[in-house]
Image (spheres, rainbow, N blue to C red):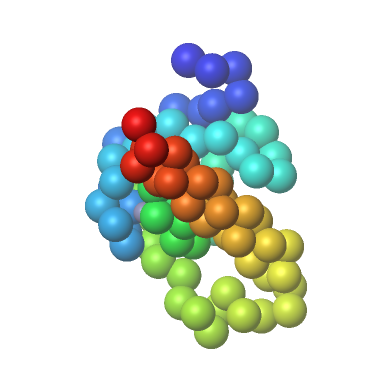
Length: 92
Ligand SMILES: [Zn+2]
């Protein structure tokens, strides 16, 4: 396991269904806790960890709040990374 990742119960992205068994913190390290945000590395959607570390989608109204400005920037970064990964995949 990558030293920067933490194991979590197997879960699926609530938006795209991508499977996950570990996470890597964007702003903190270690195991996430209930209420922490998650960015899907497959589709770029934002979700939030629940009490069992299951993820629930975050609505656009919540994401648009001023206190989530940094999260929106991270989402843009992740989506650009996904786009570049997909473009590279089409060339090979
Ligand atoms: Zn996803």
